[in-house]
Image (cartoon, rainbow, N blue to C red):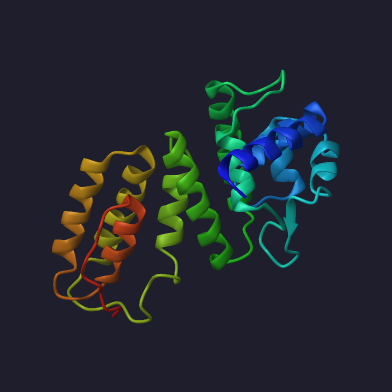
Length: 225
């Protein structure tokens, strides 16, 4: 299917939906995955009916074992965000920004009840992408990154001697903070300090994580210790 035909199909899909369903669809196109509650919060609605109707549509895929069971096909989500919208209730850039902020706030509430560290990582990565793309204030993200980085998921079983673990963890959390705010120079400075802290090889894999967070190229591949 060509780009133009996808856009025509998307326009037809939007017109077939009710106004509230269109509102929910645009909102969830910002997310990697969602459930009815998250979709409703992101859309700023007070009832889940439109979201429950939307997830029955054929372009919404279902994975009952995922953290969030529903997701749009990648092509559908990207087309919704970029295609010309012929409907009378189409969104302005401000509407998209507000939806992104509502989604980030709702995800922050879900962070406190995420089912285990693996789910927490998926949630944080999705939030980082959302915040970076829409230049949102980090709000709860910095504290959540500190909490997650400090747990056992990215820590060696035995902390190595001679390394100030707390300082390395702080620099990694600060890199996350700067990446969310789009402060590339500050993120690079944190990475430089982190490089000095890990130059003996201990916690060198923190550099891989930091470069990923900041979206910066990183040629060497560190060995986890």
